[in-house]
Image 1 (cartoon, rainbow, N blue to C red):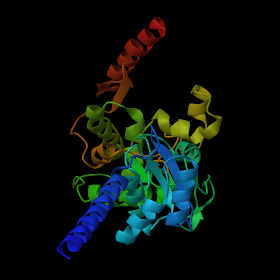
Image 2: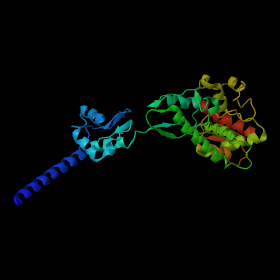
Image 3: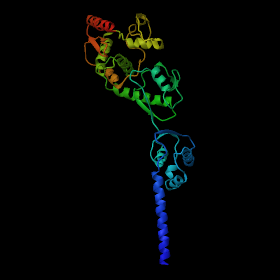
Image 4: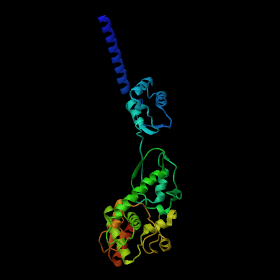
Length: 329
């Protein structure tokens, strides 16, 4: 009798050991891929269907052992639809990633100084973005046109497959709304700007005038000094924006003489809307300009500018740097 009991116990122990071995082997079994794969899991896909699809691709040897594993851990069967980047590793890690809904993240970047048309054109080319949105389409109940210029904060935005273009733009819009409100609270007491929107307009001009971050407060000071004195801003980027898609890269005297809402050689004060998406630093420069006596600046040709207090100094700088640039070209 004792021998029988011992035999049964040994058999049971053997079965348990074999079961544990098989369980351990299943948990550590590698997925049959050698590089990252983008896997789309449609709505309604169940655990068994997904496993069978992988078996057909030779990613898993068989499914019965994973079905047993799923009985022990039912959370594995909570398959969530989406697009996943499945990396080489174990089968269990792949199932776990999908059951947790850890979808692949794509990125879309709004570049400082881009205008709305440029943002929309690049968004139309972004991967796995659903329902493209174009100039003039409805956005927040209004046409997506000049009234939304400047209102998208330059940043990198993460999204999942099949999110809509409108969802991505809405995040950028809300972020600019928050940043602008915060920046406006930090404005200098003597600013000639009367609203946060005017700060946004000025910041967009500053953004287009210089790529040198350290110059932004000085560029801002020139424009603020001009506004305070009632001088026209006379800035080329606004003229170019007013020309629109017809601009061929060459600004002419005819362009400077043409009366448009954005030609700051012909209008007083600020243009009616921003001309680009300004950075946080450009926004801060607009509301906290440097203190200076400068009313003029000219590009040196290396990305920086020469600042002048008087028109005769400015004309001399123009001759120096523009003539030099022409002679070097």
